[in-house]
Length: 255
Image 1 (cartoon, helix red, strand yellow):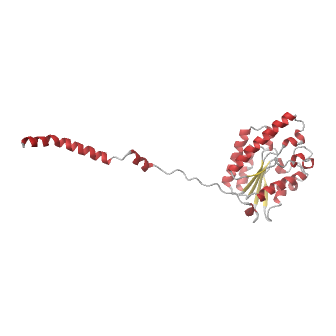
Image 2 (cartoon, one colour):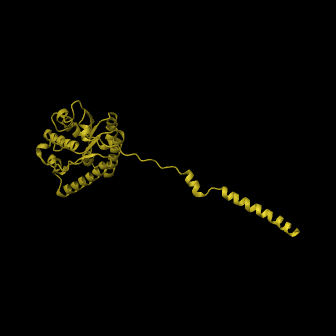
Image 3 (cartoon, one colour):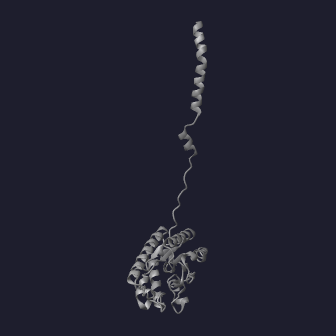
């Protein structure tokens, strides 16, 4: 018996130590449990606002804003205030509508970001037209710079207003009298670059649900002498009528 008691006395500290260790293990959370406890859900993605449909646009008076350069101003016509494509296009809108022409002759897209875009956003328009590409292309603005600015323009418009946005691309400039002096090699290169620009313009436009007015496939605008003004570059009064009709077709037929 004395030996048994002595053995119990010797084992008791060991038993207590094992019990304490097991108790500590049981109270410590595992790594997976800690991760689940501190994990937070990621940001919820919001859907992009849908553009106004043609039916909605024509159901009541609207505010129409035009962003552009000299073509929006109506350079090449004898009466820009009435013969340009912007006022001609506005005539198609429901009675009581009003239009705001923000066009600035000679402006590039980068300048329009600070001179035209803030005004467009402040007017909360239901219809926006954009033709801001020819000056950049002719002036040799780098392709990447232009596309970056275009993405910025459309992103801010789409985020700031709920409107039907239509944007024209590059027509076939090689057919204009202004560029008739170019060699066939130069014209071929120019045409390739126009198509390159137009392809990415279409890609960016699709990203923001913007309708593209495809002027390149309306060759009469630049090939028909009656539609080109005496300066060999801008539309004539008859050309602006054609231009307004092309814009209007895109506005009313594309959902």
